[in-house]
Image (cartoon, rainbow, N blue to C red; front, side, top):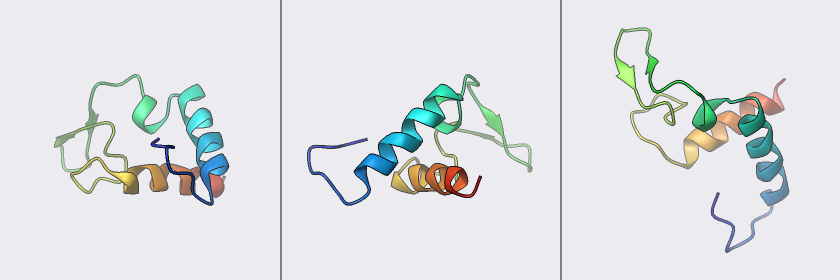
Length: 68
Protein backbone atom coordinates (compact mmCIF):
# COMPACT_ATOMS: atom_id res chain seq x y z
CA UNK A 1 0.00 0.00 0.00
CA UNK A 2 1.28 3.43 -0.94
CA UNK A 3 1.17 5.56 2.22
CA UNK A 4 3.20 8.66 1.33
CA UNK A 5 -0.11 10.52 1.11
CA UNK A 6 -2.33 9.50 4.06
CA UNK A 7 -6.00 8.99 3.41
CA UNK A 8 -9.09 8.66 5.58
CA UNK A 9 -9.10 4.86 5.90
CA UNK A 10 -5.33 4.23 6.02
CA UNK A 11 -5.45 2.51 9.43
CA UNK A 12 -8.30 0.25 8.29
CA UNK A 13 -6.41 -0.70 5.10
CA UNK A 14 -3.30 -1.48 7.16
CA UNK A 15 -5.38 -3.67 9.49
CA UNK A 16 -6.98 -5.56 6.58
CA UNK A 17 -3.63 -5.89 4.81
CA UNK A 18 -2.02 -7.34 7.92
CA UNK A 19 -4.89 -9.78 8.39
CA UNK A 20 -4.73 -10.85 4.72
CA UNK A 21 -0.97 -11.32 4.98
CA UNK A 22 -1.26 -13.39 8.16
CA UNK A 23 -4.04 -15.58 6.75
CA UNK A 24 -2.32 -15.77 3.32
CA UNK A 25 -5.29 -14.39 1.41
CA UNK A 26 -5.36 -12.55 -1.91
CA UNK A 27 -2.01 -10.98 -2.73
CA UNK A 28 -0.33 -13.04 -0.02
CA UNK A 29 -1.67 -16.42 -1.10
CA UNK A 30 0.89 -19.21 -1.30
CA UNK A 31 -0.58 -20.37 -4.60
CA UNK A 32 1.23 -19.31 -7.77
CA UNK A 33 -1.94 -19.30 -9.84
CA UNK A 34 -5.65 -19.52 -9.18
CA UNK A 35 -7.88 -21.30 -11.74
CA UNK A 36 -11.00 -19.35 -12.66
CA UNK A 37 -14.35 -21.19 -12.93
CA UNK A 38 -13.90 -21.18 -16.73
CA UNK A 39 -10.60 -23.05 -16.37
CA UNK A 40 -8.41 -20.06 -17.18
CA UNK A 41 -5.35 -19.31 -15.07
CA UNK A 42 -5.22 -15.86 -13.50
CA UNK A 43 -2.79 -13.77 -11.50
CA UNK A 44 -3.33 -14.46 -7.77
CA UNK A 45 -3.07 -10.72 -7.10
CA UNK A 46 -6.14 -10.14 -9.31
CA UNK A 47 -8.54 -11.10 -6.52
CA UNK A 48 -11.61 -9.44 -8.04
CA UNK A 49 -11.10 -11.19 -11.39
CA UNK A 50 -11.20 -8.14 -13.67
CA UNK A 51 -7.99 -9.15 -15.46
CA UNK A 52 -5.93 -6.35 -13.90
CA UNK A 53 -4.09 -5.94 -10.61
CA UNK A 54 -5.11 -2.59 -9.13
CA UNK A 55 -6.64 -0.83 -6.11
CA UNK A 56 -9.94 -2.59 -6.75
CA UNK A 57 -8.30 -5.85 -5.70
CA UNK A 58 -7.36 -4.34 -2.34
CA UNK A 59 -10.88 -2.97 -1.94
CA UNK A 60 -12.28 -6.44 -2.71
CA UNK A 61 -10.10 -7.98 0.02
CA UNK A 62 -11.04 -5.19 2.47
CA UNK A 63 -14.76 -5.66 1.78
CA UNK A 64 -14.49 -9.42 2.23
CA UNK A 65 -12.93 -8.97 5.66
CA UNK A 66 -15.42 -6.25 6.61
CA UNK A 67 -18.31 -8.59 5.85
CA UNK A 68 -16.92 -11.48 7.95
